[in-house]
Image (cartoon, rainbow, N blue to C red):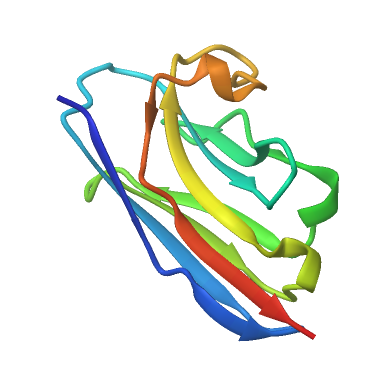
Length: 125
């Protein structure tokens, strides 16, 4: 059974940084896409960043380019999202997701098979 467990959320001031982690277990596919999504109150869940297991297929949504970095440690089965220069509009629940290894990685949340429980990120001005 696949499990994804996020950690690292919290509250920061405008311009601050946070690093999210997602520990994965039970995923047996040789290749896959891993992604970070976020959902703010009243808004749809959006893909923030994604990467394929072997590091190709990097994607960032336009609003986080230059500030967020997705990375993974395959030996630890852990996905990361380093978030710098955070803004109040980055406030949301952040979710880790795993899905099929298409190229590019799937766009929409319905295309991802497994989800973590989410971690709250709050950025205050």
